[in-house]
Image (cartoon, one colour):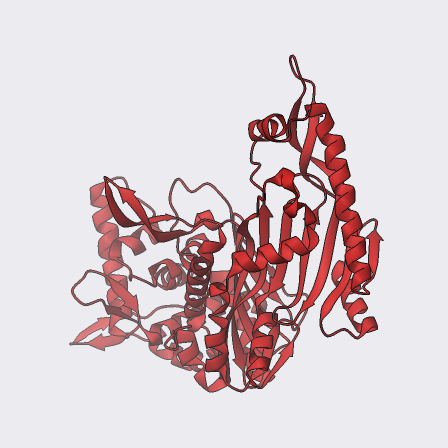
Length: 511
């Protein structure tokens, strides 16, 4: 995280440390059987068995996997449990760890019935055919306490195509790295409430995406899936992708009281001011007329601490919440990486060039996940930098309301209780203008819409120019050098942000 981020600079006296780290990460391994045609060719030409015999063959392989899982649990002295109905596996696993007083090794093996992608036999013209579908099957979960990664699990579907899933947590991995290097820390759940050396912790956290993931994942999968060693799979291994990745930025405050006073205002500001354009900007996108999807914001304040706001763009999320009343966490959750663009080498017109391409799910793109998520968290924090204790801004409101005289000319004041003036404040504070500033035309479209007639557009542009001049003489906006753009000054962000919040929250409450 850039230490010059306006939010970190503004609240530097209240902040102890900042840590950017992967949190929850889910990998998924796929065997190379992507389509029905490929599956049928494999059965006909590689296995050389009738298609009607493939399901009994798969049933035998499924029984082998379950038998191996039971033997693995017995070998490590761990319980093997068959679960029916809805169960909270995490609670069961944590209770097992406490009962066994376990520090390392296999915790337990769970077998559950779940609906997953598998195969079925259909009648075909001349001969039956195999096709992929979703059906209930036995699914194995092997939970391990790893010396390097902490609690992780391997999930294996016992029916063809034997898809594998691995879960782990980046904060647990970092805790073990800190412990191995003798660094002092205090960990609660998946967060650090104390770090003796935050800079060293950040250096270690940045190693996570550079680990030999394919080798690690393949080794963990082979512990549970013994079929990978059988001849009929011809030595096929899994192709590993990142199914879900959470990347968090934790801002650790010195005192709980400091965050307790600030956090409600951060929630209110995000609810009131962050619109669809802002959320897309945080995620490195812009609102395009052909954008096909939803941008939703969900805020829950029913628990303190623990209140949170979540912005969702299609299947990717951006969240803010407090941990234990002491940590402000900004978190980007990536489920669909192709919504992000990254620079990659591609051959264009016979030459290799760096071009912008959709980000892929393969584990080779792990460092891209960190780049785009860290940038999103940083933009979100920067947009929150306008929030502060509004008391000081209220005392400055007198300069906003009274006329301002400059060079013998008087400029009218603003009325914070007037809807039109508040719309102007919100327009210049719009997060979409943060990176490049705003023009007269941007504010004109926001306030008046797009006029069809040129004469009307000129009249509106002149009116906006007068409004911007009134803001400028008060030092609330400043000209971007060598351009026709304006930017909001630090004083403008403080004062105008307070006035917007007062209008939306103070006035209705007093009505």
